[in-house]
Image 1 (cartoon, one colour):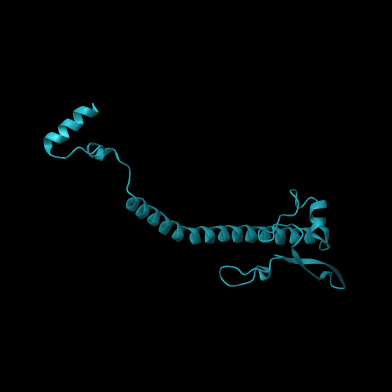
Image 2 (image 1 turned 90 degrees about the horizontal axis):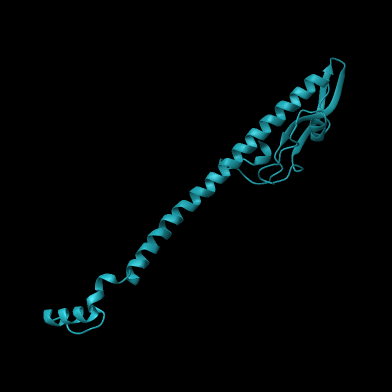
Length: 151
């Protein structure tokens, strides 16, 4: 087969080079590979920041939901028991949080929540001290520029 190709090439005036008849079997050139790699890198450099922002937005959504749930349960506990909880663990012990205290999505810990403790009026002449609000323990700043600890 190779001898037939070599003879055919000689008759057509292509010379007797060994690789000349196999020009269609070669792979990509280095230039073609470099162009493709450059295009892939350009696309990846545009996608990575978008991916990072998507992750931060997802964490912010989880934090917003956790804060809403914790604040709602603190209010329900205060109404049901006629006194505010003294700790977040008390919400778990009394069955208000069945799955335990959620982890702060920015600190990855359930022990970094910051709580606001104030006197809560129970009756016109009586007040009890306890948790009235909860915030993230993170010192990071959100995408809109507000610290997570102020949410």
